[in-house]
Amino acid sequence: MRMPRPGAADAVLYALGAAVAGGVGLFAAIPLQREWGRLAVGPYAAGAVAAFVLHRLGAGVRARTWLAAAVVVGVVVMPLALEATWRARSHPGLHAQSEVIITEEAARALLQGRDPYATTYVHGPLAARPLGTTTHFPYLPLMMAFGMPRAAGLPAPLSDARLWFAVGTSGVGGLMLRRWPGEAERKLRVAQALVLLPTSALLLPTGGDDMPVVALLGLAVAFLAARKPRAAGVVAGLAAAMKQTSWPVLPFLLLAARNRDGSRARAAFAGPVAVIVVAVMAPFVLWHPAAFVEDAVKFPLGLGRQRSAAGTPTIGTALLRLGPHGPLTVALVAIIALVAVVLLVRTRTGSTRDAARAAGLAWLVALLLAPAARIGYLVYPLNLLAWGWLLREPATVEAPQGGAT
Image: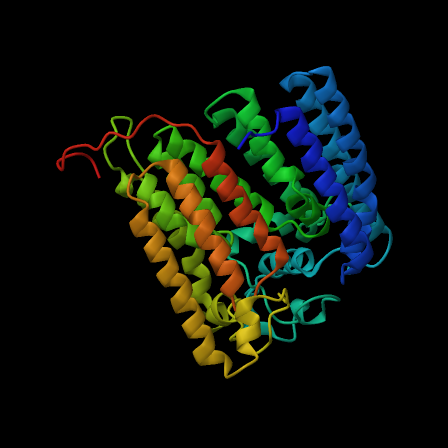
């Protein structure tokens, strides 16, 4: 099948973005997402027209990159700036999704010397927040870093956690693009997948907590492709200490960890991951184990005292309506784990691109079967599959058994 020329593919991407933004603006259940759709449909449509013109003129990748930057301003930067400003001028619970508020409130609780996880202070700051869940911080401790500006008293709108999610995503994404192997065309596609797909562009102005995690995973993939397993382990460890959604990707990245001579380097990758995760999580686990398990384990799986606000319909959520949550949740998690194991076994070459593809497929299955999910989680499989498609790396040469591990 003949692939579309790059300029034509840009036009299709932006036209698709306009269609999705229009649908979100009309039909999304969350008002904040409808606002994004109405703000983004115009820039996406203008980008599609401009991309078609550039295609007809035979413009090169430089002009198309400038166009992509302009579309980012229209569909991400402008909506984010407006929402943060509107929030600063109104109630802090408005113009922001719950993940923004709970990240900021958890950081404030930590600075006040209180456990950010629920059980130890059910009647504390998190119980009074205006949106979202009332007693839970369902992320891992490093996510609180993005809430520290507001907790430390930085004035609004500069203290909005979404701004810092975006800053983190931009900084890490820039490093990822610098490290990404291949020509400028591939790097443009990687950037488009990261911030210009409507699934990504919607998240940054409304919530955004998943975006720095995705960017960190992308940088880890770039380091693995360059045969730098320790650097990849450090970056993946930061993602793993931030949000549980990065964890399903780690076994696949471990499989791809190799030294420059092609020998396996799984310990070099796994070591930094383990050190960072243990160092970040251990103090909170020891502070109040039951609180941590309730918030960071049970609640995301839909097994907590309070039901998760992640309400996107999936096969898993449909099945949970048929019977008791506990056994069905365990069964769904077991099926997801089995699929992941099968994909791991089938990823025999150990190449980074194969690992990214397999991780993307595993994440897609997990999203379909998850007992609690958000449509925003699509950024994980979509980016992983894009990385597997766009990655170029040295041919893998299997080292003798005595090689480094």
